[in-house]
Length: 119
Image (tube, rainbow, N blue to C red; front, side, top):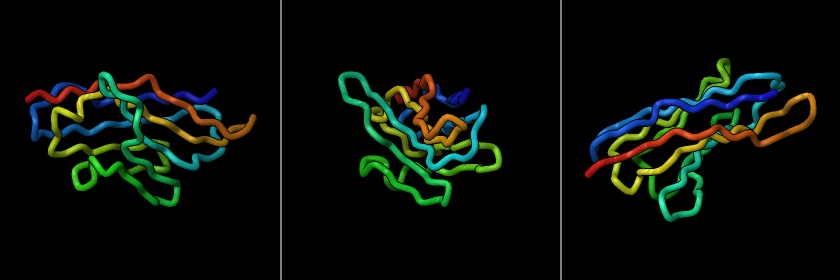
């Protein structure tokens, strides 16, 4: 009933920028929070950034000062502006949406978008 779709990934040189988007759609009453996670080769999935409906944000220490998360509540969309990208940022980035539906509250995951940073 709820769909989450990421976009904006791609290949960029170190020091460059990318802007990821995540749009949620379907039978949604409200969204408590939207977050970005990533999985790099050989590593566990980690939280990159999160934002609540009240615009409270949190970031992984490794991306503070470089990444900015924002949202458009009217569009049920969250963005991740990634600046000063490093090769270690290379990963599949996943959007997580904590949404309230008619059946309850669920965490819904997108299918991921690849970010590759070349050196």
